[in-house]
Length: 442
Image (cartoon, rainbow, N blue to C red):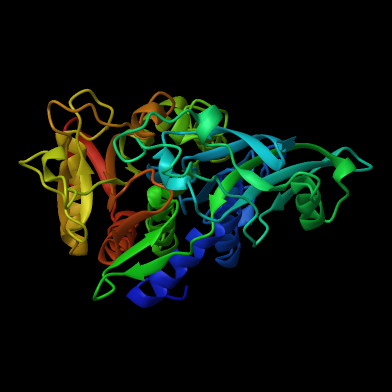
């Protein structure tokens, strides 16, 4: 296939386009599916029988927000290469779209995930997601993302809130509700219905979120950084997908998998999240199509490695004291290898060592990420996915600033590092001839 992933400018252009398109989890899934289709991957709907061929390239979706792609092995299945990320980001979900109140037309929202709430104030916002519309045969999904500023969440002026700059407890029900016009004006749902090509009366239900209007953009004197909404975790989703697509799939017994889950920001406990059965169901169907016994399945899953890819925190330029003093993480310093003693990250010495050898082969630097011992850190999908899939795992990511802000900051150089590491990972045979031993054909 065309090597679009070896040139930094082309790679960044692709990432920025992916970030700009992915204004909701439905749109990030659609953008990933478009990339897979362009590379010759065939859709296998979950609700239909699959006819899988050796060496075939396939993908499936769940809920329109989770995507899993794979390459069938050329021969008998001996192991798996897997990367997993997530396509959702903290935002505001619309509960009631059109409320006339106090002279304004408002949308009632509730918070989704742990966002930095005030970063959403006083900026142009739009709305994106899906409408469920009635048809002659039942119900159909229509994606919507009007390319215009439709809403804003106005701040209270300093004259009415003299404590605004000395600390504030934000009440989501009171302080963070958006307006979309003046009372008596055009309804938001009328705009969305027109976008979907239906009448408002045909809309049965909706899954809609607020999204920022700011496009991904390089910043810095030398353009070495970039800013965008939704960098966590779409940067990892895109770069692992590029590495997957750049993988050659030449190893006869290896099945390669790429997955982007939904709902990581709220615990991954949904049907389309990492605690759901999407990956387990898909792997079982692949194994059944290949005629594997239970014993052969256990052997293959042991001779495997899964990269759980989710961004982590760089040391903050104004608050270095927030980070582990012995493991400072910097933007542009390479891939994060993430550790946590309580196993919120799945990395062990065994899986870290294997990934380190792969990165050495790829010429990619690694940084150790760990929280201060007196700070409770976040979690990600790897340890939750482990409840469903018994595969050795390692948690990795890329460094960024302002995680869960409406607009975040990351490094341009790290984008290429992740792609190169994942491409090398997919092209490296991995086996465990004994417990605690790796054989890596580097």
